[in-house]
Image 1 (cartoon, rainbow, N blue to C red):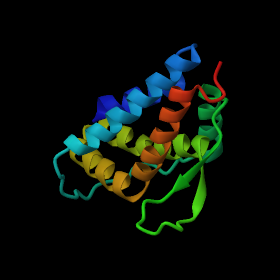
Image 2 (image 1 turned 90 degrees about the vertical axis):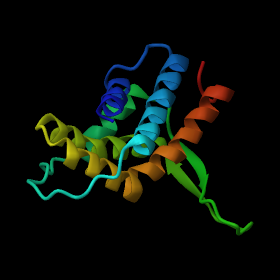
Image 3 (image 1 turned 90 degrees about the horizontal axis):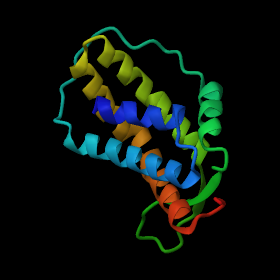
Length: 152
């Protein structure tokens, strides 16, 4: 799990220069996060000191924007049996930033030898928030890669 998280941050902080390689690396990092969630054993809650709340959304968005300057909005339809489902807009920069902000406390816990709490938090936040961002974003990255949308 922690290796997948660190790989995600590596793509944001040191993306390949080639844009297609960058998309490939991001897709792989997202796949690894998804696989890490699927592979993680259910972990019981352990009450301990909460990770520091130092979320800086704007700074994270800027960090992500530097790595993926061509990313933007994309269409999202929530899976539903209703054929009249409303089309919404996703924001790839927001998705990447939200995932990163949810993963930062997990790294903090892990680095303080609190792996059980980190795993529990990883599972909880995936189910409650960043998992949806990941799966919406993963389809967008797939389409960008397949169709080279906006990429030279």
